[in-house]
Image 1 (spheres, each protein chain N blue to C red):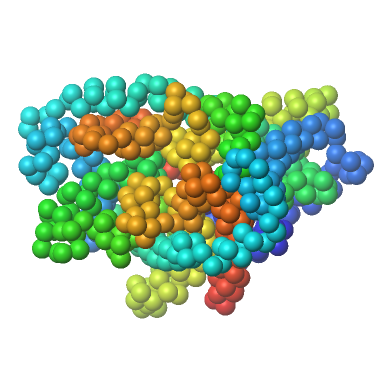
Image 2: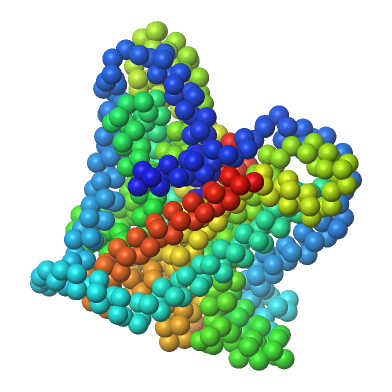
Length: 312
Length: 302
């Protein structure tokens, strides 16, 4: 996921090497046949198992196919109905609310913890190891442990707080916060590592100079740390929002979309309607819209965050 | 889609480039005073990670009566080990373990063998239009959410008879390509081309150059790609859920899902099975912790 940063990062230096490679090997404009043999199988396999399903999906989104039996073209009817469907709108509402809150929390918490782990602390490598543990756990499985925590332990431990006493997972208004808790708990592991690698790129001399000038820790953070890791911030925010929008596992583990449909995300809706609800075409149309929405959101975020980076 | 990747690339132009020399200096001769406040805070915050794990362990060791009596956090007395034996049988754990191991090992091996070759060809020919086009074609797929592929993919895999472990290996390898060539090609471009040219002068073919010279040099990035693929394939839930049809092909997360779905399960037995589901990767991680973290970090920045 966040490996994106590396590739993007080095692709800027890659340009230099590429030019050199071009200069060294100038013989002819066609590559050696072996290179084509290296690439074609992957292109064909990728087209067959990724691109064709995408195109088939887009095709069926203009039909009334239920997943079985006959079908016929219905034009844009699916898309028009989607916009009027309260269940779909609610799923988008939930997905966005969830993704925005989870993105903010993940980034604030993991940046804070990364700062702590980057400070000179005792047993630093041990703590780094501990904070990365959630990454290697299947979120579905650890999610069941959280489910027990929310529905059995917390009602007994926090019996004075009505929200927890009555099991937060059965509360249509607040169940989503429990899902945020679980998702953030896991997502932080990776974000912390990304921020930590970002922090390690900052030369310590800058802090020495700043503290000689009498800058407070807060000011050092605002004037040195944050600007210098803003590229990592951009990557983390864009990637977290994109993956939180597609939330699935934590919901299945905690509420299964309930109570009612109050925690149903778009992915869960597509999965349910598409496989067991006989809405193959309809939910595929939903997925196509979802794709457009995610792409637009990611691009807008990049533009905005990038401009902010440039201003510094 | 190409605009998307351009944006990606532009966003990083301003990024500071890490200084390896400096980082090493920070780690070895860090003369700062130990920050006890930070140490304490980090220790306290780490409880949020450790408490759910503790809960998983103690509940798995209780009898249903002990569980009903308390809030779940008490240490069980006496410890009930039979939960593990029950869970072992009721979730058909050995079978799920074999399936998951097979899928994970297969995916990692195939991913390393194929993604690296593709990335090599793309990186060394990135000035040629065909290869550049292929690169962006793969990259564009990073923006396509899984739900859009999900429904047609299921039809396709069952039609082709790939709704099994082999199919899963194939899918993880293919779907991983987008990200992996991205990780690989950046690294390959930093390998001096002179080595390869020397081998060519000695008469080595392109394939031979790749396997004998380039591939061994890729070890650090192979580790990164291997770790990411391993964790993904081992823990993934949604893809096995939609693709696998035969109950005998169930992976570990899928087995937990089915188990949880059955009405009237004992919570304690369920927890024993969760613990067994989390254990293999957790144990591997504990023993290779530093190596895993540095591998992932290398993948994220270089």
